[in-house]
Length: 506
Image: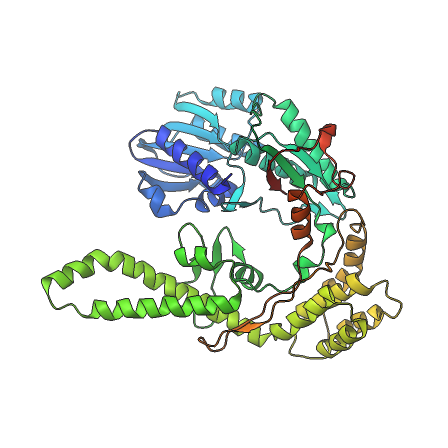
C-alpha cells in the first residue's frame, strides 16, 4: 500500500502508452502538484516529455503538430470546458487524455463532439487524485474544509473524490468506520459508502486474508497536538518554514545562497532527508556533521588531479559530487535557519511550557510560568496565543483558572484580534469533540525522555517532546482490537474484521 508508488505507476503508464516521440504534458493547477511530488522533472524529461503546460494558460501557445499531447486533468467542469476548446482547435498532433477521477458520460459526450479533427486517441481514468507526500502519507491540500462545525460543500466533494481516488488507486474496497461524536466524520463516511455502492463495478475488488479498513477521524478529538511546537526535522521545517508540495521557500532566509530561493524536500530524491526526516533535532546535528565531514573528505580528494586517471575519476564522479554539494548546502542552510529561529523566538522555553500544559497537572506552576512568558517581549504573539489556547483547553473548567486574566494579558501586549478571538473558538471547538468514549483530549500515560544536547555541533539543542498524540492511542487500540464499536461504528452495519486488516486513516 504505497501511495507514492501508485501515483508514479499511473504517470509512467500514461506517458508510456502514448508511445515513442516528442511529448507535451498538459495539466491543471492541481495535477501539476500531483505529478511534481511523484516525479522529478529530470525523470520525466528522460521519457521524451519536453514541454509542460497548464491548461488554463495554454490557449495562445504555438501549434506543434509533431508533438503528442498527454493530458492529465481533474474531472472538473472547468477543465472539461477548457479541454473542449483545445480539441476544437488542436495545437498538437494527437491527444491522450487521462482524468484523475471518475468522469461523467455527459462530459465524455462534450469532448467527443469537440473532437472534430479526430485527434483524440484515448480517454481513461487514472485515479491519482491526491498529493502523495510520502509512501504512506497523502494530502488533499484543502486549507479550510470545515466552516464552523459543518463541511464546506465544495471541500466535501473534493474530499470524497480524493479518498475515492486513493482507494481505487490501491484497489481497495474497505470497511469504513468513523468517530460517532462527529457529524462531519459520519457525513463523509456515509458519502464514501454511497460512492462505493454507486460505482460498485469499479470497487469490485476481492478482500483477501487482510480486510481493508478506512478509519475517519475528527481533529476535535485532539486539539492539543497541532498547538505544540515540533522537534523532528520534517515537522520543524513545515512548522517554521512551510513545506508545500515538497518545496520550501528560502526567500528572505539570512545567509541562504542566492541561487537557492527554493529547495526540494523529497524522501525519494534526497537520501539524507529520507534517513533523517523523522529524527529529533539534536540527532540531525550528528547526521549533519557526518554528512559535512564526508563531503569535505571528498572535496579534498577532488583537489588532487595530477594524472590522466585522476582526471577520468573526477569526470566520472563529478555529477555525484555536485549532487552531494547541493545536498550539503541545502541541509546546512535549513538546519542553520531552524536553529536561528529556535534561539530568536525562545522556542525551547516556550516548548517547555507547552509540554507542561499538555502533559502535567500543575495548574499553579503552569499559570505562573504562563504569566511570565506573556509579559516577555522576546516571545512572539503567536506563541503567547498558542500557550493561552493550551491553557484554555486544559484548565477552562478548573475552579481557580485565570483565563480571563490571560486573555487580558494578550490584549495588553497588543496581540492581534484574530488570535485573541481564537480562545473562544478553541473552547467551542474542543468541547464539542470531548467524549469519554472517543479518546481523551490529553494523554496521561506519558513517557518522559531526557532532553539531549548534541555536543558535536555547537548551537543546536534537541528537545524531546513528552506529549503523546491521541492518534497514537487510537492506533494502538485499533491494532489490539480494542477500539469500541459504539465510539467507532461501521457504516452500513458491517461486522468488524476479526482477522488481519489493512488500515487507512483520514
